[in-house]
Image 1 (cartoon, rainbow, N blue to C red):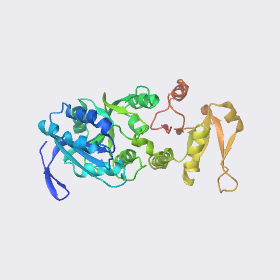
Image 2: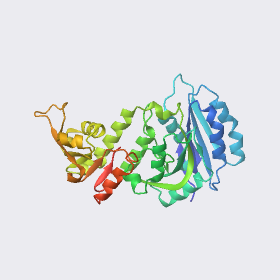
Image 3: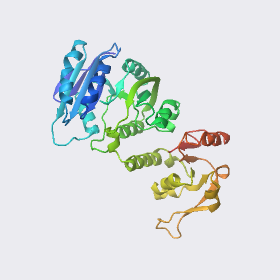
Image 4: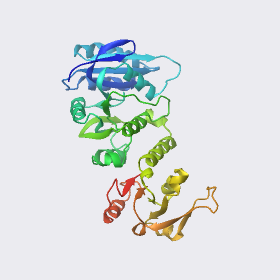
Length: 347
């Protein structure tokens, strides 16, 4: 691939093949392992490390500076900047700054508390060249072992088609053409917004099947600063935009708490599209209806509750996968439905 010049602030820099983007905030206890893993990449193209320190109060900046010579000795440029304000400005802000100061044709996002395996950049770069408009993920391993076990099993087992139909959210190992993360505030799931933004612009999603990232779970992780309700609202909005806008009517599969919460979260126009709830619980089915008590309409909406075999597709499935010992999956299979056409998961 021919090199070109790109504008970066007030200077012009020669582009490299890949920039590894690392936002940092108080990550000194993980940085050594993270940086060593970047240095160990077997990638034979040109590589750059772009790091932005978001007001760390520990030794993060000193650790970063101590690694600069090691990277330069391997012909990997290391760009370090940051700010020293009283408060951090958030992961999205730090990622944006690291992107702006980088010069890679492709971006590889890496969290400071995670560890990439040695083939990650080379394998994802090869996949990105074949699918230049896609975000490229990979298999992951969680540490400590067993933390978020269901999530890890799910993210590693979904098929290429399900990467879109189940919308797994933030691609843990995303790489794509140069872009910007449009979320700067703390408590905002910037990677989920980036993922949605890419899909809205016609981007695809693909994955290197091998495990290429050790994904650390701990109390200080930035993900814990994001409220569950924030993620819920973003996901509902995306569901309405991408799926429900294409349907004239649909059934919510789950007459329980999660299904009713989804109904209440929908716009009035999409609430009117809900023809029924369906379930397998006879107690819920025998009630016959769900009455939306908070509605300002008179009479209040009453939505039928049916057995799933009496309900009509398309469905929004509001039941957690891998929680029913295969019952949900077998019920769906018995109806001979096609995911992405007859149903979508929202769980």
